[in-house]
Image 1 (cartoon, rainbow, N blue to C red):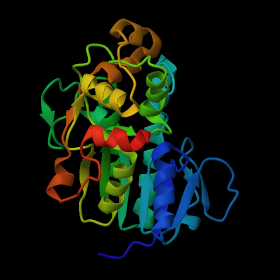
Image 2 (image 1 turned 30 degrees about the vertical axis):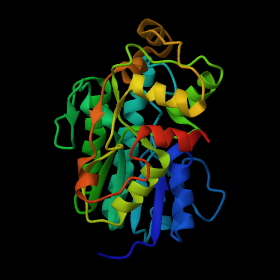
Image 3 (image 1 turned 90 degrees about the vertical axis):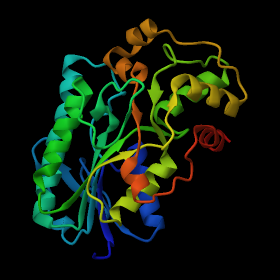
Image 4 (image 1 turned 90 degrees about the horizontal axis):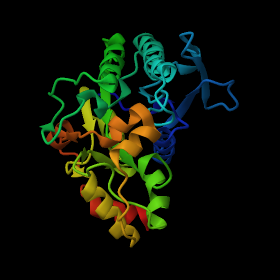
Length: 295
């Protein structure tokens, strides 16, 4: 397997992308950030995913491509227009980058997806072999993964990422201030399963996969999912604050709209591919993970 030296990344300004770029640079890789605005520095490459345009010449010689760009599912209420943006931003961007990969011939193409692929799983554990669900995000993930196949001659990995934990952003970043003021509590019934992973382990797993021979769908979640009630209790202990103010389901639906199904829904996802390939999580348990993150 050829040694990977030069790596291109879309979505490099996001929570995961910025952490990935920083770690790759720290590890000594050459990193190119693919950006939608005019380039400002020598390590940037321009693209317009809406028009299907990308500067292929500047990407010559890349060994790996991480595609992480797409409209955030929790950024806005899910109006009809924003649902379209969630889907189209993924399909157009992935089509553009996968088609480019087929021309550029990197050693590996690593494309984002999400555990939303599985839909509602209730108390049932699911692995990568499970068929997809049929709700909105399941359909988005299925179509998103499908267009990643437009680089058929390249080893392609689809990252089915769970709830990424980091105090600087994402769900945890929003929850910490509430808990610090003593206003935290379970969401809805609290019985729904949350499949989580620390940002630290997310980045480690992505680089592990890049340097492996693995291909296809890979769940990026801790091997130990927890219920929302267990999660909020662990966060309260880590912050040394009570968790006595539950957020009722009807209030979450009113505030979050369609995205409330992701907060209130249950996904019990197991990272079988990572486990079978002996990836070792630094933070496999939520209590130690949250304690480390809020220190």
